[in-house]
Image (cartoon, rainbow, N blue to C red; front, side, top):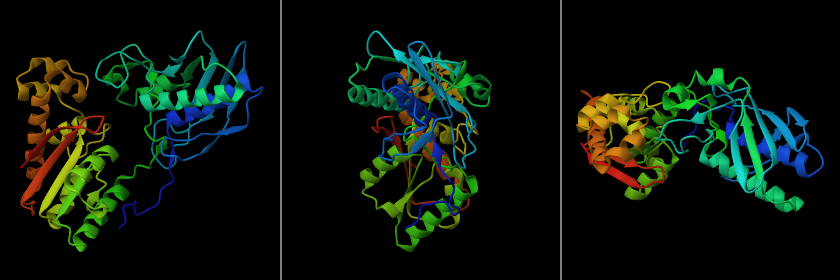
Length: 351
């Protein structure tokens, strides 16, 4: 089977990976006697990329290192930005600070608490792992303050959804794998088409399109589907369904988190955060719960309203997906599987 884009695109590195590399280089300066020209880090899935140090500065009790982000062929707003980390010894434990251009969380519903610097959990863990490894290497206590900055980040953040999400003052330090996989709409949709072709040619009557790796794992396990029945749908629910209208299968499952499936339920065909948004007033109208009007994210809405809301959204997503088939060949069975961040199923629906 093939699930790669038709045109091979160059991948890049997340802001979280760059911050981790900068942290490691700065710790060499703090504990090892000097900042190296470059460092190698280990990403969550075992990749070991090398990062060149773009700038460094040693102050009184602190070391600062900057690494230039390379997003590969992805049209990332932070491509070419300098990711800067300053490390200094602290009184105890590992603490994170938001420097210039890195935002602070001001609203609930995000994976980082209110008042915290907008450095997501996986990048935090990557940096913590580096601190512990380097401390052991140099015989130091792993008590470090890490300040992450992105010069110009506040202006760049205005081009993202951060302000609407309540992340004030700059960008988020993101990444779950450390890798930026190039985003090409045409190439990605073409890969979905090829996946459908392969599944049909093999006689598969049940295919599944999922928004990400976690939902794919859950759905594949739930229905015991082979790899070539799994379509790397990403945000392109509309593109997948459009092709299935002309190239039908008997059963379609769509899996994803509550945020993207809410957008599908509300009629979006492209679930990317830059091209569709959750309508919280609509959620409040559907559920009769006026508290949802002021929710910051779909996850927060779920935390407010619970399982009833998840089931309501799943049912509407199933109905909306079937409606998208129009006069085309709709599947006999259409399932929605909704998961939380940990991969637990929180709602299922059929249409």
